[in-house]
Amino acid sequence: MKIEFLGTGGAMAAPRPLCHCHVCNEAREKGVPYSRSGPSVFIHGPNVLIDTPEDSYMQLNRSSVQKIDGVLYSHWHPDHVMGRRVLETMNADWINYPPNGTTMDVYLPEQVGIDFNTRLGSGEHLSFFESQNYIAIHHLTDGESITQNGVTITPFRLSEDYVYAFLFEGDKRVLIAPDELYGWNPPDLGELDLAVVPSGVFEFNPLTGKRQILEEHPVLSEEATFEQTLEIIGKLNVKQVLFTHIEEPDRLGYDDLVKVEEKLKLEGKNVSFAYDTLLVNV
Ligand SMILES: [Zn+2]
Ligand SMILES: [Zn+2]
Image 1 (cartoon, rainbow, N blue to C red):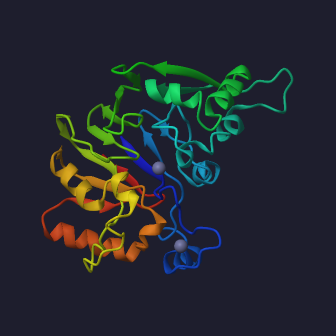
Image 2 (image 1 turned 90 degrees about the vertical axis):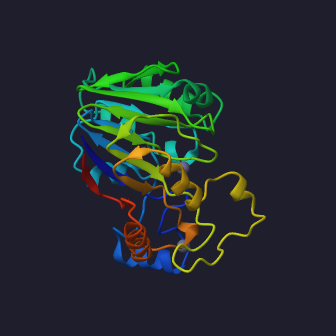
């Protein structure tokens, strides 16, 4: 399997329009790896796309993706779905009549399918695509797996139980958790070659130790912190960890994160921060 990070930003990608903080200025000036677009990842081998943030068009155009055999959604949040119209763009045929387009398989884990019916119009929009044969929707019940090109993919719920992570099992075993690790106590997932997890919010600056988020800020009872995320991955039996879903409000630039990575590697942790366009062989 090869993991391609299409976008490694969070709900606030960088540069954020109109923002002139140092992270956004640098991202605007230098681009990748300083800029981070919305959260999405592609897994070569099974050839599946996870989530369609509003940056999906641009991400897929600059990627090495040639063929998509399945699209998976992790949860209903806007930063993970709002680029869904790319499913129409990739599959519709507006030249020939009758049209000779393609149909892409879209897999919705149980709760995601339920939530799409009431959140952000995603269910209605995907049903429209299905009526035009751009996509075929497949509802997965909890516990159900799919197999694509010899790799078995099992979605499972996190502690925030409307959000799914995915276990990929082929020659190698890979965990992809796009978002929302708050309160998660990992089950025994066996030996993992790679885990891709959200970094969590930085309550403290990881280089200076200075508090960045007020103790009483409600985000701390909704989002896992970076420290909590390190505790969670400490419970996994995993060879390598890559952090993604890195939020612009954390105000950490690419160079800062490289320093954090070096510090953690000295502590014996095989962890690193993903950046847009990064391709990892596993
Ligand atoms: Zn998100
Ligand atoms: Zn900014």
